Image (tube, rainbow, N blue to C red; front, side, top):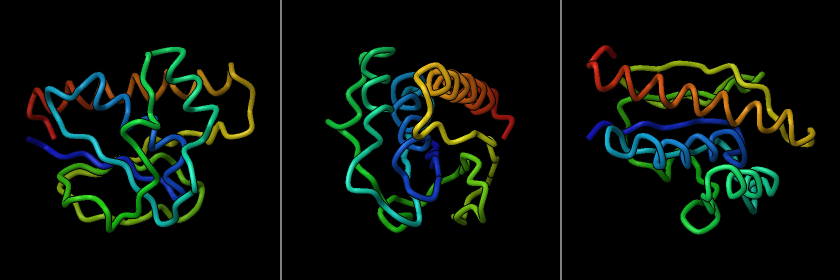
Length: 133
């Protein structure tokens, strides 16, 4: 199965949301991982709350902040839009999703980023199913 990594600097918010939605929406097509160059003690609590509310997903039961060295080799890398030098991870296909970090913003802005991630997961799933990567 194709392995996809969602990469961000801290691996605490957008990349964690992408990992959770990847498992939830595309687990039949690809294996989802997330990681960063740094870690946080816990996943962003607004992300945890909103993912439970919107999808019934409890990210804290199966996910934690990981370094790039903690995940297996991957085929596809999606960087979240770090607004700095995005971490590098070897892969066959790479794309940058250019997402704003919703940390510290209101729920509406947070939900907009979550919905954008959902859309990009669905697009990635369709590309992989069509073998167009």
